[in-house]
Length: 139
Image (cartoon, rainbow, N blue to C red; front, side, top):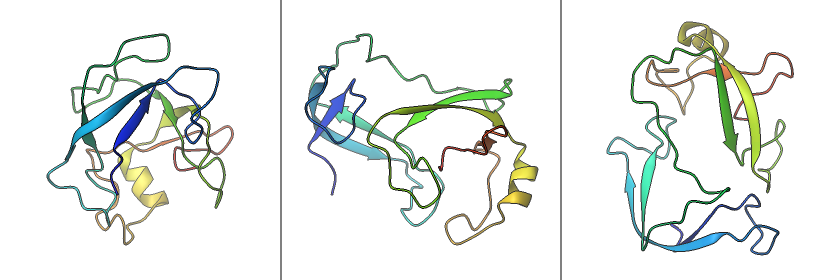
């Protein structure tokens, strides 16, 4: 079920009370990628139209999506609420992770095609890993 309300500028996902004053906005509409399929790991991006604009603060800034096919950097900075370990639940606190890009061919050798990714990792996707601590954005 899609949410009716979103919190913006909060670092604790599941708590409504904390140190930061998150902004709450009603969801007007959700736009899914036209090729999105919930059973696959492709095209999993969308946009949420809110009932009113958000205010930019120290904790609220626009997300900038890279506009080109090639990324000229070897390092990536990621943030999210993913799992912090194998078979662990999602974290409640926003976490950050610096990763090194992995060539698509190398990634497909390490992570062969499966049910969720029958075509393997596509050239339109990013494969990245933390070689020092053996972490990625999936854990």
